[in-house]
Amino acid sequence: MTKIPLKQIAEKFKLTDYATSFSNFSNFKYSGFNLINEVAELAPTSVLDVGCGYNHLKDKIPNLIGMDVIDYGHNDLVGSVADINFDSNSFNVILVLGAMQYAPMDDILLDLKKITQWLSNDGVIVMRVHIYMILQI
Image 1 (cartoon, rainbow, N blue to C red):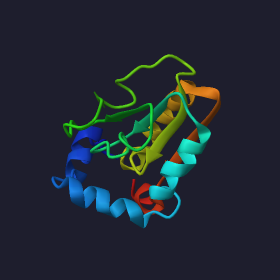
Image 2 (image 1 turned 120 degrees about the vertical axis):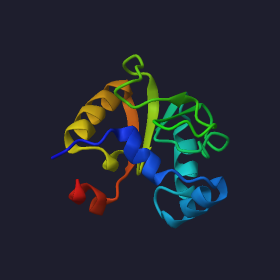
Image 3 (image 1 turned 135 degrees about the vertical axis):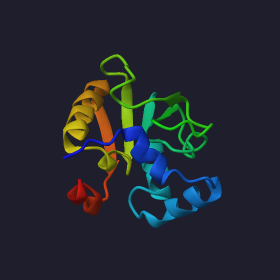
Image 4 (image 1 turned 90 degrees about the vertical axis):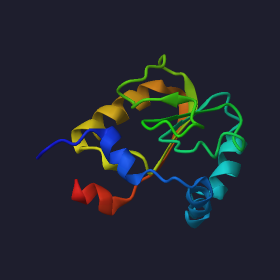
């Protein structure tokens, strides 16, 4: 299998219209707008949004840092999980909302291992994965 760089894959799915990308957010029953209230109830001191895109949760979830492999102009950090380092136990909540399934499975497993190291012992990871995309990898 030929490996395609994650940044190239992400560019394929990059939306140029912020309003369009955010309007789809309400379509996800458990990881859309309902998620904002659930995360707020946890009262986290630090939240990481992996694959944040336009970082539309930044002003809705306190203490959120958004990272993405593409510079959308709104994200706090640009780079992949492999490229960015945080100390262990840095985040109470880590969001991965439909971002990881585009990578090869080996990269996904490495990223998950790294992300879990960033999570505090009592932390929560919230993931949304499009299963059909994983099956195509």
